[in-house]
Image 1 (cartoon, rainbow over the protein chains, first blue to last red):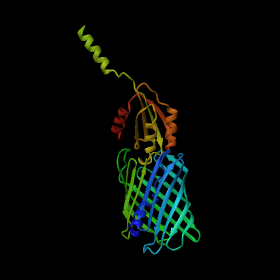
Image 2: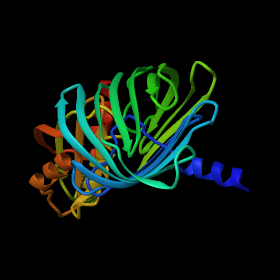
Image 3: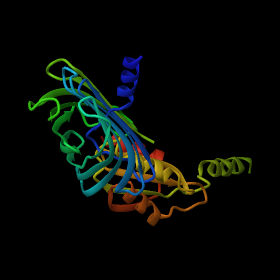
Image 4: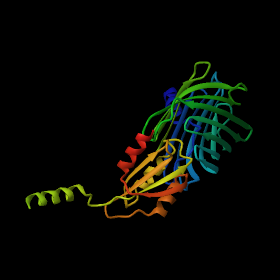
Length: 212
Length: 108
């Protein structure tokens, strides 16, 4: 029974998809990011073109599952700066959370904070981003840094599906000091954004975004 | 007389009852369909909007008004801005969205 609860919770709980982490003004966005060691789910609402609030659950565990930690947070996303160019767009984002964390290597729940930053640059054919976030609680500090780059096979129009190849390097201090490299296939179609791949150890990874 | 009557009817039937003038905007930063959803969704909700067309390759947004209504150009520009983009050029084009879409597709 506990395994089922953990499985369902971990499916519901997952995320840090690195495209724009919020939608347009007055829109909702639901995002999920699922892998063996990191699962996150977020739903946020864009109050303004630059500000969104939401709820995020994050589950992290070591490869051997000896340490597990789950955060439930109220999150705030802020578009700090955007550059709209004729053939490109670049952004700097602040993403922060406040809430509680629980884990199997400490007792009870602790208050947690998780400030982070993201920078991205995208054309119709190229994509690059960098992301850093720190999860802090009393006596616990985890950080996640990642970088992504990729290209699209072709320039797609608004109503066409666009496939991309994306490679991510990610280091999660709770899991390992080594970088996890994950190639992924990204598909964008209208309001759907899906990525699927596997890291070099063969562990699958799935992420998605949906705006509505 | 009969021929003149038929010719007149034909001319009337081929003349559009309503001359469409669409708004065509060139937009900077519009590189991804997922991120540009807001433009279509927000402008489609405006009361005078009949059709919206977004063309990522041409960086163009075209808005056609409903018959007998006129577009609020300022409000549309504000909606594009709220969707996260910058309008760099606006034109009034005496064509429908379907006609402009057909032209842009041919140009590709």
